[in-house]
Amino acid sequence: MTVIGITGPTGAGKTTVLNVLKELGGIIADCDAVYHELLRANGPMRDELRARFGPEIFDADGDLRRKELGAIVFGDGTALADLNAITHRHIVHELERRIAQASAEGRPAIALDAIALLESGAGDLCDVTVAVTAPEDVRARRIMAREGISEEYARARIAAQKPSDWFEERCTHTLRNDGTREALEQQARTLLEQILYKED
Image (tube, rainbow, N blue to C red):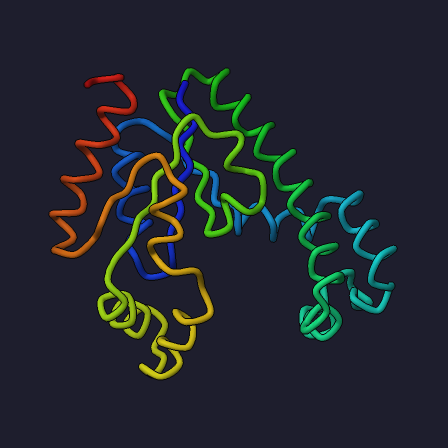
């Protein structure tokens, strides 16, 4: 089984690539969804967060108070690094479990979908990594359409993230999404089939 890391900036087209992998029989581990599941249900991670940042980051129902936690880590590099160290370790552990499960099921591949794939340590679990990138203007239009936000806010979101070349330089493969969705699907299918079937 092949473990494929899929990463890249928001609005670049990662979902399109992931859907192609599903068509080829692979499964997806959405690292953002994994994080939210662990926040709700993973006792050890919740305990570590409570010990580091205080009990007030959870409300009476046990849900994370995101604004309170954000206020603690915003502008505090050490606090943010501690938050990432705690959450990334637990996410990677859960990803290891899902990879083993996918392998036991006989899946051809599992994709780890994460914008912070390389920084979190999850990239170390991957056999190959794929950067999905697109021009900033294209990404801005996609984000605006998807989330109903202004161009100014969309471009602010883009500016806050790492640029496309950061991902391209660090991944083993790149899919540049500068045409139609169909063109990206064809690019993705060609690349993923090469990866899965080890074609040259």
